[in-house]
Image 1 (cartoon, rainbow, N blue to C red):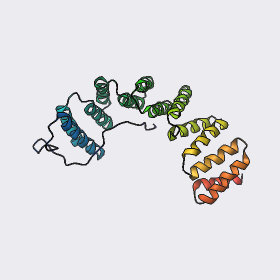
Image 2 (cartoon, helix red, strand yellow):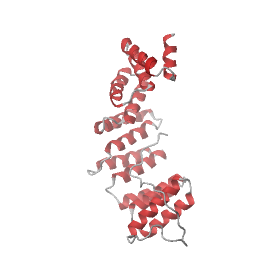
Image 3 (cartoon, rainbow, N blue to C red):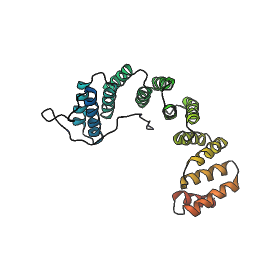
Image 4 (cartoon, rainbow, N blue to C red):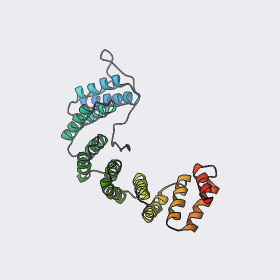
Length: 256
């Protein structure tokens, strides 16, 4: 399964952990929401380190301080998803949307969760809810997530839809690297090399030189019959990346 982008996750920070009998997690904080956010950061830090017990303790404390803070429920959803308690994760994601119905990140993240559970139609609905929100600024990432969700489903009937959403992502961000690579892969699988060429030319403009890029260029140009252009990519492989696996493949192709 392709990993989808989870957006706007609270940043992790390193702090000392305190149990019930210890001092407050952050001194001199009077606001309940500020206390909750401190606990969220601490909980996510421990979750990142693999300490699920202390992570859960701090996230529960965050909810005690601010039971209606959407951020706290989202962090708990992320925790439950990490420990594979998917029923509780879903309830927490739904609660985030109830508390923050105009938050595009909430719909995107729930869509990503549903996609991982194989619930494609529900995932699509939530991704599209995100991009409907006028104030939402991560539209291209959500379209890309939706494209990845559908393309990775293994259902051929979903591939054309995925193509459409990848192109929508590129409409918002011409440098959407994953969308470009995904489109190239789809058209390679279909042996539609002129389409591969069109997206490769866009990819080349936003990518650093690499053996993988030149090898893709070589194969693309060769398959559309542009043999001189293909040779140029071959020369670049020999000159710039002589020891790469792609260069070895290029040398073998010359012997065939």
